[in-house]
Image 1 (cartoon, rainbow, N blue to C red):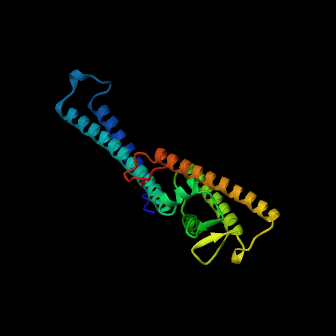
Image 2 (tube, one colour; image 1 turned 120 degrees about the vertical axis):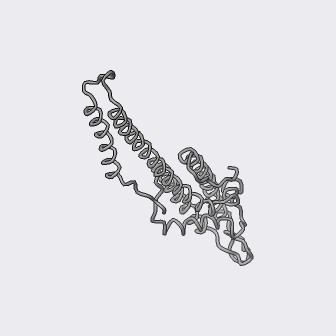
Image 3 (cartoon, one colour; image 1 turned 90 degrees about the horizontal axis):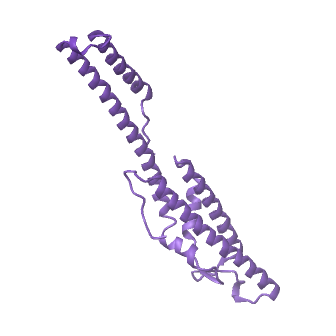
Length: 219
């Protein structure tokens, strides 16, 4: 990540120095203050010290703004990377597509990519609120993915199914158990879609004002 560290101590020293210069010039010119006895040289010195102090304050404020923007922009970059996995199609599958007997083999490819990404992800979001929901979403994504492929397998024809090879029938008892597990999978998928919406909406709120934009698709 491209994170800049604000040189805190030099900035603080410069700030203190400018304030001392302002106070010192004021004392040197006249103390207690008597506007009637000010001379030109004293006024110029006082104005120079005042300009130096104001410039230092403005520079520090701008540096703080740049630091905040760098932090938020890093988080935007990270979120946009994750959006490549949980894209429009993956979100639609989670939110709208019911788990049925046969599923396309790439229905949960985005979740798989996110799981692999999360395993090697050593950088956290700077924003702790976003990081917290991201961790929950990633954990729930792994739980759903493992549950799904604990029940479904590839059939060799571009689909996944719970049916035994050769499309053999199962007993009524086994079928009811499978339907129960499918109902659980559908609830988990819906919860994942809701969690993803929560993550995106929070990110839009928390990262508002960053110089980089969060990539968009309709939720």
